[in-house]
Length: 289
Image (cartoon, rainbow, N blue to C red; front, side, top):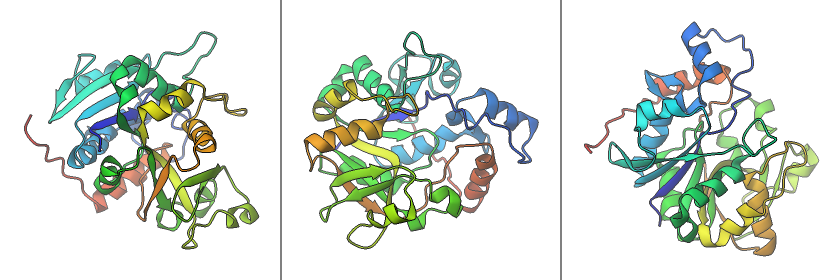
């Protein structure tokens, strides 16, 4: 069981900045082009509020938000101190994802988590959960990971429950687990023939939506030595965890879950997310500090 949650919010958000035909207000277009996706306003509060609320309801307390060089706006909402800002019962600290010399954008998600463990060394000897800032994970998903007894785990989502257009779903990476739900492989953009080999024991296609639990003692070396993705030129979490899986075949377990995960990838998703929140209201009834 862990009380630590690392939220990845330091990415370049390049897909969010692409033009769109969606009928967004000028203010929302400006937010999409200039802010982290975590800080785009939905019902007058940042997207990140909804993620934090569900995490708080699931029992997390220590939050580490990975931000980039232009992350000062986070401090307007979540506290000006580097560490342990009080926010509705949560303790929020910041991780500054430094960009290596010679690069113009962050070095990827594995690098973000690695820098988190280096800036907060206590995490190297503890368990923690990692998630994206632009996916609205449920309280149930967070609780399943936080309380899971395995040192390393991920939510293994039923692809059929994801409410996205089919062409988008088909691009999701598939996970392959054995009969005991231990991760064996991940395949990106599989063909229909390849995908058939990735069904689980129940005949389901399973995908990862990038929410994981890790044990720092076990996983930190794989973050440090993570290979650079040959196409995206970044150090990515799936690469690091597959290296760990190769060395330790029963090191990370998939937790089956069948539910939708709203996503805020591009400008079109802003309207979709607002529609989702209208149909599934999240009342931010925070406990008192």
